[in-house]
Length: 487
Ligand code: SAM
Ligand code: SF4
Ligand code: F3S
Image 1 (spheres, rainbow, N blue to C red):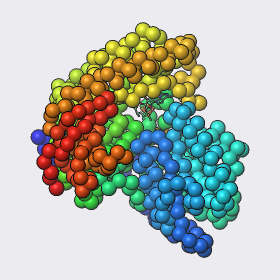
Image 2 (tube, helix red, strand yellow):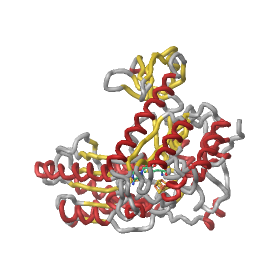
Image 3 (cartoon, helix red, strand yellow):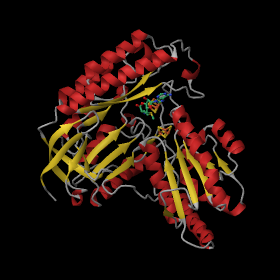
Image 4 (tube, rainbow, N blue to C red):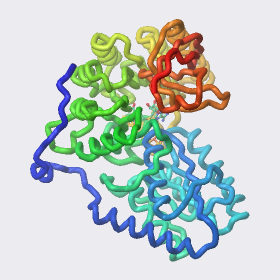
């Protein structure tokens, strides 16, 4: 077991070294006052106020929406699960692939009808799409009923922007490319009482040639370790059982802080916090996944035995064109180093099929990599050109039909591997966290490695750790019964 102690450092030293701008606490206090002003304005309207928050994209966006909900709650809003009749609709968008953008435009388009029926409704669009100039232009021109648009870097200013809209009656577009900062003290309304997100850093410096994220989320900036650890402690004390640390590349955590700390250190500190919880994290960039991180994973019991390690392509040639800064060989070396320390680790990944210039031989290398690694699950994406990224203008000779055939082949083979991996659980008894009730009335639970179990059992078990006997499996899930109940 690693020696896990809580960290203590001289904060005066930190003040001189820190490079990431922080929004001053007085500024956040001002935003909270502005929430009260919004509330006073809305109180003049009859009835209870309801907000509908619609979130797209990754866990980072989910975490952002929880903070936006925190502000909304402070403004006096309750929450509804439909835009129909809501006083405020907030659409938190994702720009990572074209499909995500189409869905957002379709759903924002449909809001013209709800607004017609409820003309006082305030419609806000925020998140990654909102930071793109062409999206802001389109919203300005073609969606005149959208009242407020702001990018992720200005989330902390939401109360001020909303109040401006309400007091002037004019549309507000806060979509400029402002440098990102770290804002502490924004209230949070969490969506789950068992699982929680904790952002450890924001933004990305990696500029993979296909990816829009660095353009819309800005440069990497880390939260101070004491703020992160205090949040985790609070969550543990409140009874949260499953805490995920978030960042686009958590392995670069701390590089901007000017302190001699890294993500492995942070994880070790978090694992030393007392409580009955598991720690997960995402995402890890393979180029920065260190032996030291793997040691902490293998030796700290609170760190969940799973790793999401996106490989994107099995071909070193394509990885170079993607600017991923590792090769097939160095990626496989990282997997071997991890499995040497933690042989039963659950491994998941992301892969892109049809990157511009990918040949059939390159794709075969992706197929052979998934055979070699045998991931428990894989998130498979077809390349989607993103405006302003280098890969948008790369030569792309492979016919779309060939890309689709490759994509289907990869999916089919991975489904077989996932099913085989799941079959190996049948007959075993595994520890799991019961986290909800599915639409079919059965319980849902997760193994420490994050495998989904459909569980026969009683609703009162939600939020508890149980031993489950696995009786069956499929590509996507395990099926089981509670073996012995513990509360
Ligand atoms: N930061 C994470 C990393 O580097 O692994 C990934 C974050 S990204 C939001 C999630 C996944 O979306 C990526 O791993 C990649 O597979 C996929 N992705 C990003 N841009 C894409 C694009 N233009 N086309 C297809 N898939 C894309
Ligand atoms: Fe995108 Fe690459 Fe950054 Fe991940 S590491 S968010 S894929 S640029
Ligand atoms: Fe999408 Fe932005 Fe996340 S582009 S995947 S919501 S960082």
